[in-house]
Image 1 (cartoon, rainbow, N blue to C red):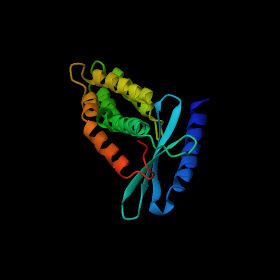
Image 2: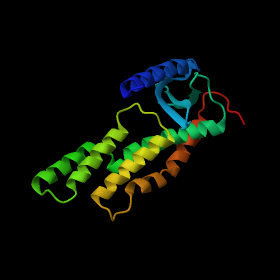
Image 3: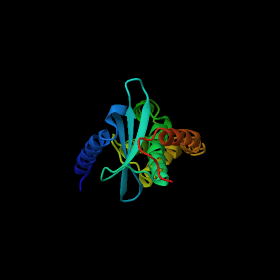
Image 4: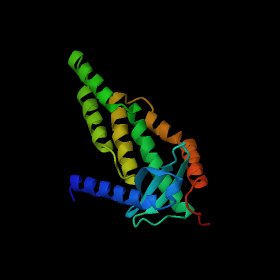
Length: 192
């Protein structure tokens, strides 16, 4: 399956899941987000966020068939990989890759320092890795973003510690908070 076909299928899956998610307590809010995830390769799930007009939020994880997931471990895995991939995308070299690329191009044109071509190539590779939404959150995607980000970090300053790694390590509190929110405002009863 080529990339375009894959993207079209993912969009269709997101629309299908959003429609199915609306059937779970429709009076309690509208679907505001659907994030696709594969915490385990081949086992697709979708983290669905719902929001009421007054801003109250609730959550639900659906499997690929549109059934509500009630297993706490599966919910945690889905929330964790979806959140980590989002954090990775936002943290990759400060998040504004277009601006960084513009600065590197300007630097190449004015000073042309050694290694500038490698840095520009690394930015473009990271942009391609991150792509455009929607994207399927998975451990493989997280690894790909990490590798592309590290390549860019090394091209920019081989001696500097990785800000990306520090951001992901620092995300545990955010991840715990999100998981608490999801479990606390889950739309169906949870299993043991």
